[in-house]
Image (cartoon, rainbow, N blue to C red; front, side, top):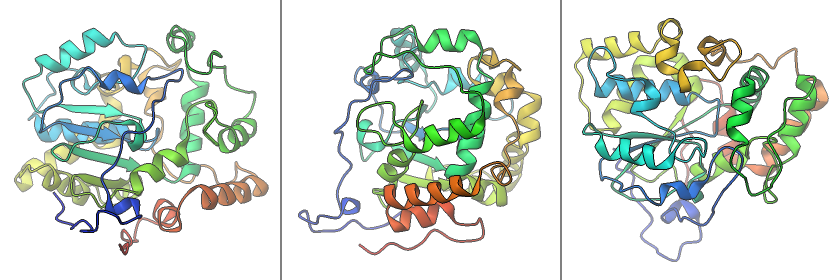
Length: 327
């Protein structure tokens, strides 16, 4: 893990200098953050988090192949369940996790202020340029099956409304996603959950030694280096041959060939099956799609919602390094 030192002043107002606090309960159409309350957490647990459509499944797969040699012993969703998802039977999920004898790695899309915190656990967080996230989320949304809509609407959520079907075009979707929130305190993310709050909540504490902040662009640019970085953070020391094998296993084309193993619910929740979920994995698809005024609005919202250093990191090109933050 990182050896970054923490600020010795307990009265320091900078959130980076204090431990994350569980201050928010989120209950929407997809998840309920209180589902974490009944789980007996272990000191070596790995929490894999992201806002959405930022490489979550990719990161889960990397960790899975670092922990297991050869073929995975079960589907990725069984090995690394999404605990707060309210359309899965909670008791069954908790039982599955209690029975796991391997090092557990659990998926989450919660902001850090809605997730139980502990210094002993390892937190991996991956994010991506919001414009790329929006394009990937649009593909995800328009390919949802009727079964998927029924699943998320079977449990009442805090707002009370049912999760809507997608609008007629990507421009309406993007405008709503950028400037509407599902819950009263959210300013963006419609009809899912706030993207910008999620990213900022993790950025505020990314210097904690048991949080590893990852950028999707870096995995695209140099997968081997990032797999090495993840392994080191988790205290895993694979030899060079093993690292190459992990990278080969989580190559996008290799994962797409075995998409039913990696995609949630085996892909049955998407009209085109698992391959609709693992669509392209490319960046920049928003160019030539989003209108100039939409790009200007995105810039304004991002700079308003994110701190300057967080905005810079999220939108940097892949050859830039993580900026050093004073504090």
